[in-house]
Length: 153
Image (cartoon, rainbow, N blue to C red; front, side):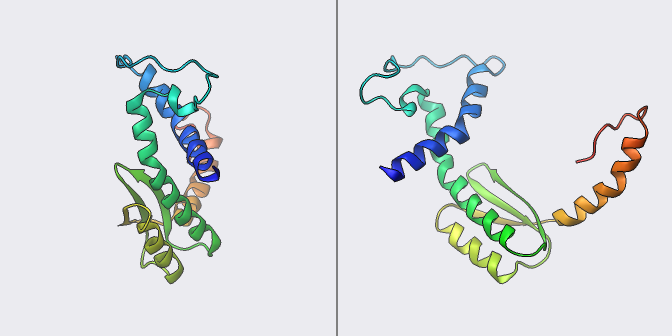
C-alpha cells in the first residue's frame, strides 16, 4: 500500500500540471476515451480520472523523477562543486556538471542508473559561477528601471 501511495502521489504531483496543459493546450482536444468512473465510486483512484495517454506519460516519468531526486540529494549533501543542473530530458535524466565528477556524485549516478537512464553532460559553468555572475549583473539591471532587462536569473 505504501509503495502504491508513493507512486500515486508522485504521479499526481508530477503530472497534474502536465495533464492540465495537455488538455487545455492550443488545439489540444482530449481524445475520445471510455467513460471514466464517477469520482468517489468504489475502487476509483485518481489515476482512473486522468486520460490514458497522459497517465501513461506520467507513470513513465516516475523512475526518472526518483533517479533525479537521488542525484539532487547527493549533490546537495556535498560542498559546492561543478553542479550546473539536472533535468528530465525525453526518456532519461541529464546531469550537467563542470569538470570531473567527485566520487560521491559518481556513486550516486551509478545508483540512479539502476533506476533510469542517466546522462552526464559537460557544463561550461557551474551553478555557483552562474550565481556569482548574476549577483554582479543584478544591481545594474535593478538600478535602471528604463532598461529593457527586468530580472536576472
